[in-house]
Length: 204
Picture (cartoon, rainbow, N blue to C red):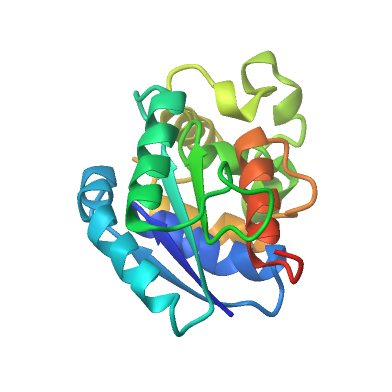
């Protein structure tokens, strides 16, 4: 069985190249990045039709990961599910097991996952405060006011990192290796992690 993951930006690919082996060890996988969310959604029907055709001779599972941005989470998720069903793929909502595609939404950008693992941030950037997650504005990684990317950039800059602006590829490269996939406070990360494990499990 092989796993293919579709993401909307290079930094997500960079992070997942490190995180996926931690989440589903031993799984053969490939990650495809697009030039933004619009490009991914535009190409998705064609891609999904191709995956559906390949299922007749190949054991393959597909995961689609997009940022919510300003979209309604329920509406965006339904849009992804409809695309999958139209292509003939079985989604998580259509079956308790035996599904072939996992659609997941990062509620507040990839940086919410990094906010969800403060020890990883501190390991990558030693001057970062280990009590960051205890500050009220950062207690819920998926609900950081003003956008998680901007907020994380400001925090890092205050402690002497990523000046004059946040470099997302470098951030992913430096933080992801330190992340503990079992103890991330971001609910969107937990849902992605658990869904990915179900997708590739022997029972599925």
